Image (cartoon, rainbow, N blue to C red; front, top):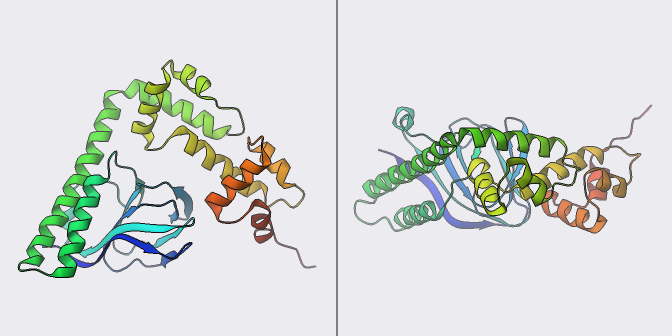
Length: 263
């Protein structure tokens, strides 16, 4: 039987709040992020969009913070590792289910049972947690089955995606992207999201911001130069997107991440 240690539904923390548990929380943790978050996994930091899920195993570092607003639903629980073996969904990495409404409903019921402790609430919580794990597995397996059925198309999209993210400073218009895989716009965006759980616009934006963060550590470069080298033709758009994803302006980021050598 699973034991719920703590949970929250549509839980809001203060803006820019951060969670850092170097050795995990001592139990399993499932998170459903409802606002953009910055997450570090295996020493790699990435920004996720709302609707991202993350399942932490025991002993794994938990390191995430809000870009601005902090809202999530979550459940901490204990149980035998063997009881999780037959569930198929990613562990210790982000994934994007096609529809999170089912998970939200289950997490809401878990929170209600945990707080009210009605008769047989422990059995009810165990049942709800099994239901959550089943729905997570089904969602993940269905999305991958669809990808395998379109393996050739998936490979084309992977080639396109790698080229786009490797040369993010270029003009990647919808027409150019669609022509590369010979699809209409509606088909292209539908396949892209089903394969990669994100839109090309969002992935291109985050790639450009990541490149900008690296360039801003070079004190010889001005912000407008960095913006141009990352594919932004409007300095104001660059500043707005950068602050939205990083929490500070480009100039502030540059000051915070450059060092002065002391002779």
